[in-house]
Length: 285
Ligand code: ADP
Ligand code: MG
Image (cartoon, rainbow, N blue to C red; front, side, top):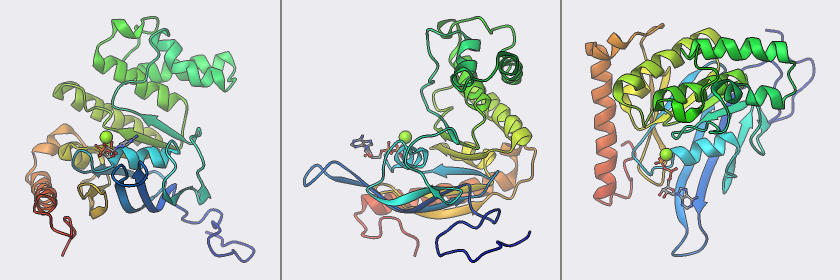
C-alpha cells in the first residue's frame, strides 16, 4: 500500500492505512451524579475493531455491555474517552453504524416490506433500486411471501428477521447487535445465527455482537472479548481459531467445548472475585 504523501500529524488518521473501522478509547462512564446516585459502569474500555471483523463482547448481566454498545453507536456520550469511526470522532448516531436491539425495533404500523424499505425511502433512494434491495434482503432472511404482512402477524423470530433485513438494507459499514437473539427460543436463535453469518460472509460488514451467551459469542466471532462484572473492563481477549464458513456442528466439537470451558471458568472467577470483594475485581493476575 502506498504511504501518505504528506506528513501526518499525531492522532490524524492515515488515509487507507489500517485505521480501525471503529475504536473506543479510554471509555469511562458513570450514570447519575454525586453520591449516592453516581454509578461507575465502565472503567476504561479500549477496543479497536478492524474492517470486516466480527467481534463478540461477553460478560455478566449489568457489567456495561449495552452501555458500551450505545456509546459505540453514538447514542450515549461517554463521561470520558472517545469513539472513532475510521479515525474520526463519533458525535452521534449515523448511517455508518446500524444497531439491532434485543427487542425488535420494527414499526407495527408498517408491513414487512414497509419496515425494510423505511430507511431507503428516507434516504430518497429511487423506487426501482429500493424494490430490488428490499426484495433481496427479504428473501435472504426467508420472508418472501410475507412482504405485505404486519408485525403482529409474525412470530418473534420473523420479526427479528425483519429487523436484520432492515438494518442490512440500510447498508451500514458496521453492525452493532445487543443481545439481538436473546429472546428467541434456542432453535430459532441458531437459525438466526446461521442467517446472520451467511449475510456477513457475503457482505463482510464489521460486526460487534454483544451477548451473555458464550456459545453464541464463540460460534459467531473472530474475536471474543470478556468483560468483568461492573464496573466493566475488558479482562481477556480470545482469538477464535475456527475457520469459516461455520456450521452448527462446530458447537459439538471438542476444541469448541474446550475454549468454551476456559472462558466460562474465567467469567466465573471474575464474578467470584467480585462477590468476595476483591479489589482486583476479577483482573487477571
Ligand atoms: P449489561 O448490558 O451488561 O447488562 P448495561 O450496560 O445495561 O449492562 O448496564 C450497566 C449498569 O448501568 C447496570 O447497573 C444498569 O443498571 C446501569 N444503567 C444502565 N443504563 C442506565 C441509565 N440510563 N441510568 C442509570 N443507570 C443505568
Ligand atoms: Mg444489556
